[in-house]
Amino acid sequence: MRIFCLELKRVLQARLTWILLALALILSVLLAYLPATYCYSSYTDEAGNEVNLTGLASISYEKERQADASGIVTPERVREAVEIYQACLTSYGVTESYDLPEGVYEEEILPIAPLLHGVKEAFADPDTGMAPTIMEIDPEKIDGYYSVCEARIASLMAMEQPDSPAAQHQAVEMYRKVEKPFEVYPGMSSTILDYQNIMGFLVLLFCVVVAAPVFSAGYQSGADDILRCTKHGRVTLGVSKVFAALFVSGAAFVTCAAAHILAVNSLFGWECTKTSVQMLYSIVTLTGMNIGELQRLFAAAGLLSVLASVSFTLFLSSRCKTSAASLASGLIFCIAPVVLSMTMPGALSTWLCSILPASGTSIQAGILYAITGFKFLSLGGLAVWTPWAMIGACIIEIPLFAFLAVRSYCRHTAA
Image (cartoon, rainbow, N blue to C red; front, side, top):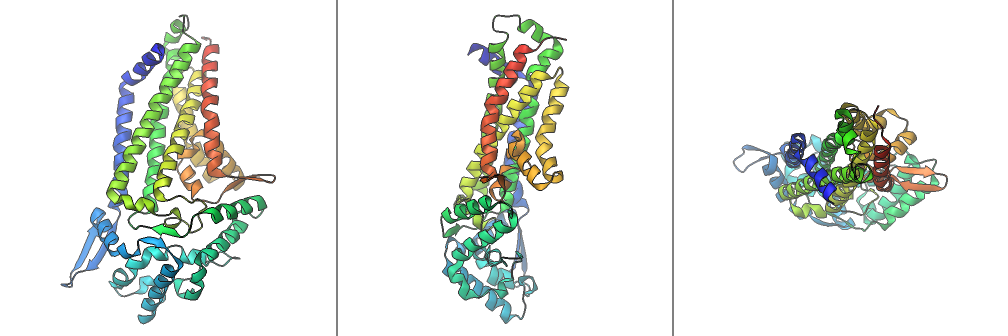
């Protein structure tokens, strides 16, 4: 324990560590506020003047206008919203809401807009996947809204995973178990969770920078030649170095994730976290979580991804002779999932992005997008949903690479 405390003190005494940790915390709060800056609303007041609202004022205005749409999304409420939409557009002789006269959308459609989310997708053509316009949907068919959604996931998976009946069957079963009817509480958008993903990726990069020189700096300076000659200079010191780096990285991520979630929910409204994931993403998203649960799951999965990436970086550090080499190697593997998701073929990309340590918080290929997507890893008759594969891989990689780092450190010999 004493050696662990000394190693922890050594890591925390580095000025770069405190600079990166402080920057990570500041960015976590900043990224919670940034989505609000893109919010914009306009309306015409009683005097006939156009009023433009931005930021939190816009969010507050839209939440007030959509207050009646909050609550349980029953088929009856969805049908009523569709009928209002169709009646409004018919009365103005248009077929799309963007063709309505100025101010009509804000007055008549905006209050019911949350209930219309997913309607077009639910009634998409099962063969082509093409969604109809709301004007083309028969309101009477909405009485079986959730049955239509269950049929939609079956047709969607037939297109997404045509060669994997196991994935199709599992997706249908997962969606059938999702609690229905859904709930919606206006105020948040999917952009908010995108920024949480960016926060996780930045913290990951900072933690890798802190962990990269843990072993290689001693090799480079020659200090390790002296330390490994002491009584506890091999296994005990190696284990202490690993646990100190993991402790600092884990504490940094937990602090930043907590600050980000608290800031987001305080700005946009805690009631919004009760919104079903399906009402923010695809109406046939496979998970039964609400937004608050998704935030917490991503935080937990992000923590595992950061710890797995730091463990892997420590392993690289134990093998590299210079800090620059270990840092460069660690950063390359951090951005690898992003590159692979854009360049590799579909199935191979899915497999690689599911097992790489940094995938959990990766941009475009992270666990957030896996949870809201429909990808499965297929192996014979077995199909594994990619979020569970990512989490499972990280749980295995943390002790594996930590062990390999200590083992490599103990076997290291000076050149």
